[in-house]
Image (cartoon, rainbow, N blue to C red):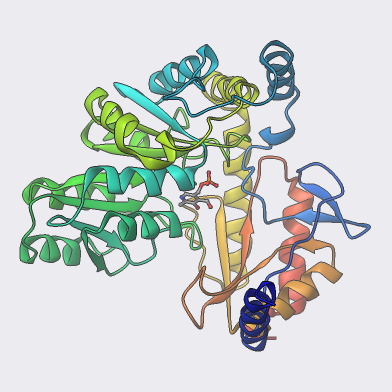
Length: 391
Ligand SMILES: Cc1ncc(COP(=O)(O)O)c(C=O)c1O
């Protein structure tokens, strides 16, 4: 029976994953997102969400989504280049362009789609793309899909990047990097990277997924913090993390946005985001820009947690809301997560291929919704368990 062939393949591969401690399972939340969540009948402090500002359940966002849902219904029926475009999409793009201070913004259904759609729209065979060794999977896949030659440079090493740019002949050169690295929480040396791009005539695309809403005086990301928004060719942001919604976007020039609208396959060949989501995201941008109370609270939490980690003898850079506690092998990381959970912490083990072999970890993500008590409890649990020392 041919239907059994794929199942046999699947069983074989699942067994191999399980044997290496790499099999993943789903666990449904029984409550909304938040600092406290209900899972498997237990209430736990959530340290694994990217809802950095706690906006995913904000009454303002809910009200905006409900009003748009009532007006426009649920689905959009088509891609935006067919009949799936609406005033809600256009309003959100205009709002995001003002927030990002860019000439144009193009929306994608996810940050993942923004990255995999954008790179192949800009470069192809005969071109070269230069990618940080720890870039997010969506940038990696975007490079692969582009068919451009991909040069992976050592993590956050602008000098190595400059050498690679000098040594690699290509028609077009594109450099791609996360600004905040999703599994390590450190930041790219963007000024140096920008200087290398300038020297070698390369375009620069950055992924601000974990910086949108978190970094910068207005919350527009690392480029805003460094005052280099206008100098970076493409800035990818996400609606899915600090903005509490779902979606991705590219802040860029009108010409690049127009090209992406024509060529980025996830944009052209996929049904557009629901209008309700666009309305909620517009409200989220409004919240983030008009009032920095949540961001200030998040940064107080970041400083307190970083200080606590350092007191435990752990390195803590304090450049973002992400704090890795490196454990090593996958099974040890799973065991550490289980022991944290017994003490009331929901912190997921992150294993290869998400992180390099030998660096499985607990990844603590902070939120403005965490109280000081939540953070202090997490630090106390880490101290008691000694997980960071292999205990
Ligand atoms: C650096 C980075 N880029 C892009 C994405 C994808 O964004 P989204 O969740 O909106 O698809 C993520 C999310 O995990 C990420 O960490």
